[in-house]
Amino acid sequence: MAEVKLEGIEKQYPNGFKAVTDLNLDIVEGEFLVMVGPSGCGKSTTLRMIAGLEEISSGKLSIGDQVVNDLDPRDRDIAMVFQNYALYPHMTVRENIGFALKLARRPASEIVERVNDAARVLELGELMDRKPGELSGGQRQRVAMGRAIVRRPKVFLLDEPLSNLDAKLRVQMRAEITDLQREVGVTTFYVTHDQVEAMTMADRVAVINRGILQQVAPPQTLYDDPDNLFVAAFIGSPSMNLMEGVLSRDGDDFAVQLGSHRLTVPREAVAARPALEGHLDRTIVVGIRPKEIEDAAMVTEHPAGARMTVRIENVEALGFESIVHFEMDAVPVISEDALDLPEDMESTTLGGFDDVRRDHPTRAAARFSALSRVTKGDTVEAAVNTQRLHYFDLDSGLAIRD
Image (cartoon, helix red, strand yellow):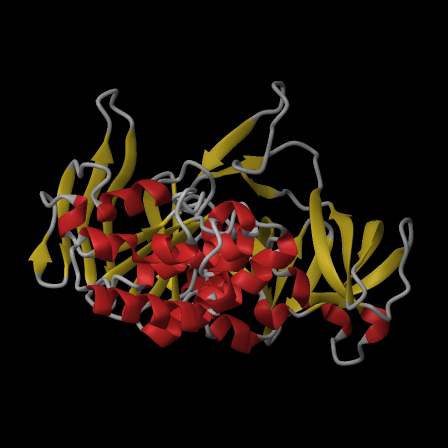
């Protein structure tokens, strides 16, 4: 095992395009760190620089106590698992797993022992004499993992390894890879565009966008305490509802105005974010997680001041809950990655987000209990947990906290 340290890492191509900018990241020894972001954000480029498959334009990359910027991939003591498995079709499972050891001219007895150990850990015993063409996608992925762990490297690198699997198998393989990493204990860097993979597998998650690291934190911290608008919108499904609002004093408490809706905010919720005092009576961005909006008919604890009347636009019944969509007449703040603006719609960019300044409402989502009986077209009261609102600066897009 070894720590991986990236200090001021940049990747710029000859045409001037900068794929990664000033990346500083420590992957702790034995840690499972997942880097997540949208397509083209620089995550795979980062992995390939660690692997030695992409040249580093500037900065320092260390594995353990060794700077590896100029080392060939074979000299970095890393093992990589690819999206397409990269198995040799003419070799059996046994031969595929042991091939790297054979190339390294390890003793035959050692090869047998290590291959058998990997087969046991990955439950490949009955498949050892089959060839890749006889295996399912999940089985091939386990073989690719076996080929990586048999080498006992300092670092595992996994590049979107589950993207070719169907949804059910991805869930199974997420658990298997996580259990395997815990058992083997090897420092692991895993890249994916799938936030569910990131949130369910990682010790820590690194969120990257446009080559710039946005936040590194344990999964729950990213969800509960995002540093900026991009992380707030990217982490969570459905994503956080983001809109313009104004926070002001309301007697002993506070109130936030969201379009025509005025919601009471407990003073302790504002006290927990001291910097909010400097943003009172100014337009800011307010975020509400869908899970903090409920059917008021199903709850009794929310005060009357934390309710709003909405018209239901759509209901997605999932069995264990319903995702309810409705509109609010507040000005929306929408990720430009998810927004395809009509050509005649004016917008201004802030912190990687588009602030739509026309008479377009905020399309919001809520998580209602499966027992709720709301249907499309209903006008209902929605209860908002105003203790759990998020606040962001309108210009910088940064969270307003301390």
